[in-house]
Length: 379
Image: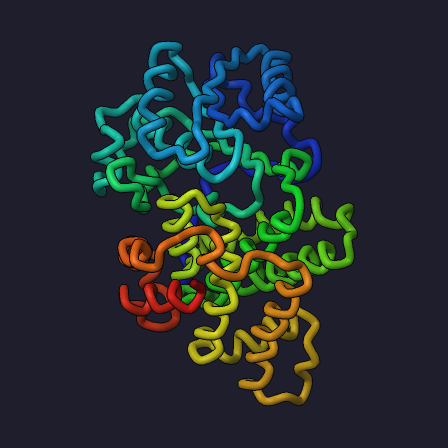
């Protein structure tokens, strides 16, 4: 198949690459850092502002992002950016922070409102440049031409289009990764694994995305096994590399219904997106056994399963069994009912997820009923 893609941003990846923020932002006299208050705890915000100020860049902080933030938070950030005449927006934080930072960059110089953007309006070229400094390596939309935002009117998720050239740089520093505790830490690896597998099996997949996503799947498997073996020192570098490959692979290919459902559930309910992906993962894999048996067999091989000489169908099922076994050892979330969710309230969530454009590239025809069936299985 034909492959067409373009990466706009300059990419800096590696430990302590945040130290290059001053050099990367040196053309901007004043920047607005959109961030989250949890990053004060490890002094990451203080570190970033010091790096920028040492390069003569004035940094203004916007950190009023609640746990269940929706897209309209960007309106207050945009007013601050306009009033302070900021020439760049830095998104410094997790998935919600990056979403709000992108919206802020789009609307701060244009006449578009947040609701017009959520309702499908095409963003114009009158925007403030956006620089991504993610603290999670699991953003499938980091290099894509669209991203997920939460609509404050009903907490549904929408796919928002990005103007070309909005993201001028991405700094991916493993030392800035968010630290989770307890058994839920490993769900970040299952989350990345789920997105990578869906993009690997997408109808948009190509040899280019396959080469990146196979390596991402291998790295996420190694991360999961590091959690099992309690070798935490092995995780940080692998997470950084896996996150980069995941984002690149998704920019060429596309995630699927599992990713859509995880974002939709997280948008509507106070349940972490990584937990949702983890719970859904084995059921997504079961569907892919029928839809993409050859690729599931390859995934089983990447996971270290004894696939040599086994029939394709048998090898494909090994991938499902392997994930379930690892989930059982780590005792990660396995059912949505454990989080006080009502099955009846999940119907709108299934419909919202199904309507996200990238779900059309799933390797089987996904209807709203099919999306709801996945949620019922995982309930």
